Amino acid sequence: MSSSSSSDIVKVVVVGASYAGGAAAQAIAKIQAQGSYKIQVTLVERRDHFMHAVGSLHATVDSKFAPNIFIPIDRIFAAESGKKDSKDLHDDDHHHVIKQGRTLTEVHPHHIVLDDGCKIEFDYLVLATGSSVAAPAKTVSATREDGIIELEGYRNAIEQATKILIVGGGAVGVELAGEIAAKYNEYGSKSKTSWSDKNKKEITLVHNGEHLMPGNFGSALGEDLKRKLENYGVKVFLKEKLALPQGGNDDNADDSSSTAAATAIKVGSRMNKPVIVKSQNGTEFETDLILLAVGNKVNSGYLKTLYQSSSTSGALVDSKTNQILVKDTMQLDDQAFPHIFSVGDVNNYPYTEKYAFKAGLQGETAAKNIEILIYAGYHTKSKLNSNGRDEANGSALLKNIKLKAASTFPSNTAMVPIGPYHGSAQLFGFNVTGCIGDFLVKVTKGKDLFVSKYQKLFGYSGHELATA
Ligand SMILES: Cc1cc2nc3c(=O)[nH]c(=O)nc-3n(C[C@H](O)[C@H](O)[C@H](O)COP(=O)(O)OP(=O)(O)OC[C@H]3O[C@@H](n4cnc5c(N)ncnc54)[C@H](O)[C@@H]3O)c2cc1C
Image (cartoon, rainbow, N blue to C red; front, side, top):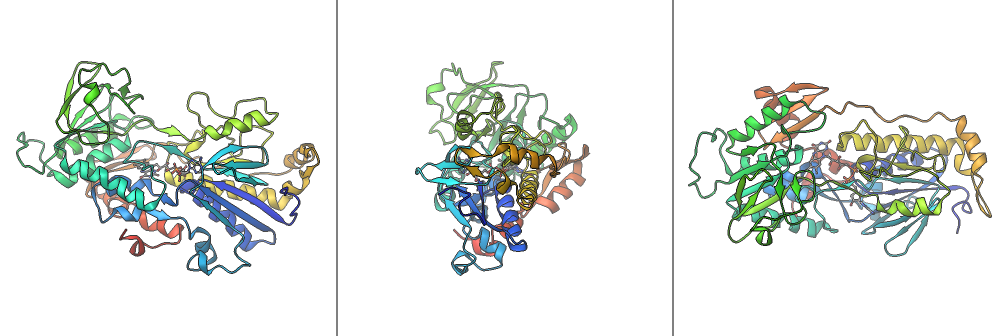
């Protein structure tokens, strides 16, 4: 069945049910609720849940908190319609579809293909497949149940380890070191040299840059965070690059791995006896648990088929980063695809240090622009004839449509917790450090880590998900 044959239904497919895709899917479902058009949203997600990465590092050390960050996606449209869960939807309402546990493998100009071979046609498509980073920052499990168990594995490894080596001094590495330190060490323990307390962890954070928090952040933020970590007894090493055997092929770790102990080194699980890892400078680190906080990978491989199956002349992804190239309207930066959008971590929108709240704003922008296109009738004007779309007709229409640009919220804003009680921030370039930083991060982020906000987005409340 072609997408245009069911002429009164506009088919919108969103891939990725996280900060960006979740916001887009809900906002598009709202258009349906308010407008006269019939819109069917199909949400495709390779997991059965949304993994709230913002809370993952606290969840790594706190078993009670952990179930909160694995939020089922089954209520996302029910939440929109005000009903309790998808079972309560009447036939009339039940036109939105959730394809969970399904991975997008191919994109074509007017349909996508999933890993089970399922072909889904669309009038508009939103690609919100984000990025992957080593666990525990982002888990890999497809089911909520397995995700909770996966995180528990890291929790147990941390509990049993004595010398923990964290690789990467961006926000993830700093926050991970802070969470572990806040659980096992005392604040103000910097001066203590003895590690005789059996629960205390010797935590080492190794970073290849000149200061913690690289990117758009100046050195002051990194120095304040370093001080706070050291107050918890964390040893911070800057300008050091490690040689690791696997999973470490990134900016902070060198894949060549010629260290004598390399074959015995495992990343992410506790080793029976401590090993020595050497940096390129020759510095030796003894460790029985290595955790990676580096190696962000953008999930855009499926786009190859769009490139191959279309008449597009330019590249669709950045050849270095694999990020999808977009305009400020969140449409692909290619005139052949005004109906395909990409939002969140997976795109190259320049005003992004990649953040959850910006991903959400971009999802809303894409939804707004899809609404504008729908109401202008783009999908009908560019409808299929027997050979394909009448692109010329669609292009003429596009010239008269003004779409919305995504937020250019400054990149130099971040709040980095060091456990529940400490942290530092940079707001629009201004550093909020010392005890004011502690206070700000604690009240805005430290305790809840925005769990309630995102559980509400997906139709749940914290109380319901507190137990696995
Ligand atoms: C530890 C940690 C802490 C963070 N803290 C903060 C913070 O405090 N504040 C902040 O603003 N940001 C924070 N971030 C950044 C934030 O998490 C990201 O910017 C955000 O996850 C981006 O959202 P997204 O929706 O674009 O992509 P993602 O969250 O990566 O989601 C992509 C979704 O697409 C799915 N998917 C991927 N490929 C496919 C496919 N082929 N088929 C189907 N589904 C697919 C994935 O399963 C996933 O659900 C943090 C990140 C980490 C790792």
